[in-house]
Image (tube, rainbow, N blue to C red):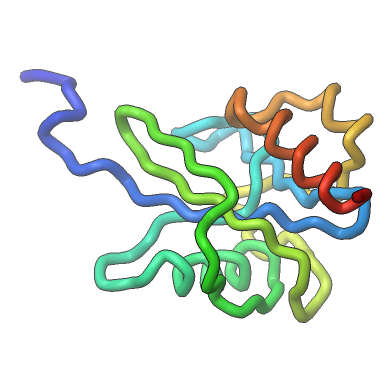
Length: 141
């Protein structure tokens, strides 16, 4: 039996880069998670069959961090493509509610981080530092 990912479709993932001034919101993935355990990541998740990516993002942010956002009408600010998933990332500057860890089975912590604090974190993807720096620099401009 082959372990090749060719036989299964790639997962479609959506995430939100929540920016509040000079900080970004990240979730710490529980060490018991099958995929990407014990790293800091943006809130988000899988696009369900028949669901539009923007709708999936709004649902995932509500389920994971308890905030309500309007489904984005603009293209994502960043995309990550691997052998097993395609991820779209949207910059989110406005939401209703206060972020909380609404999915403790998925994350053991959430937190707001400044650019200086991000350097000490183990992040889920190596493209994140540049993405976060760009998003925070745009906010300062």
